[in-house]
Image 1 (tube, protein in one colour):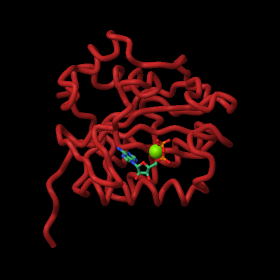
Image 2 (cartoon, helix red, strand yellow):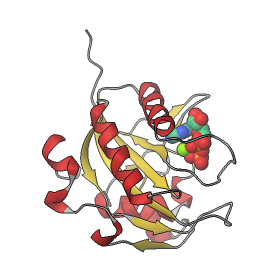
Image 3 (cartoon, rainbow, N blue to C red):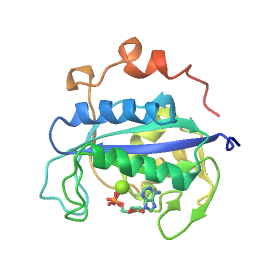
Image 4 (spheres, rainbow, N blue to C red):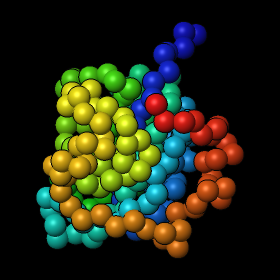
Length: 189
Ligand code: ADP
Ligand code: MG
């Protein structure tokens, strides 16, 4: 079988229903089981909902991953994980058990009917920018041609973001379910 080229995918995860931290931990595990290796994982952040504001706060994190899956196949995988965790597509921008967005696919620019990468609104969302800043401040946005650090400092992002501690149910350091089974941490590019 022909193995695809390995790509560094950055994923944004969010949940604002049920056990929010538990949902994200589950999602990380399920991604690992489906051919997506987790290289870095941000802390967990509690964030203000944007758009539809009359809903619970989200828990968000960002993952740096690598995978031989194509971007369209990865979207299928992430949507299948969302569904398997009980997400139903009802109110747009409304409460969800799990949302997985593909933020970057290396430095590729993808525009198809079902997929736009880099994610077209990531620079407007502090719930994405803040965790990205934590794990990859020097990553360059291939469309805006700016680093995450610069985009964050320029202040296009909206929404309040609060760093959560381990008490919030997000395992830290060596306790991570991801560390032993998902390979070594690699330095940032
Ligand atoms: P949102 O994440 O914007 O709140 P959804 O998760 O319901 O909304 O996604 C809606 C659609 O966005 C999906 O059906 C998917 O095809 C499309 N989409 C386009 N680009 C991306 C991307 N980079 N990551 C995830 N979904 C995307
Ligand atoms: Mg989404």
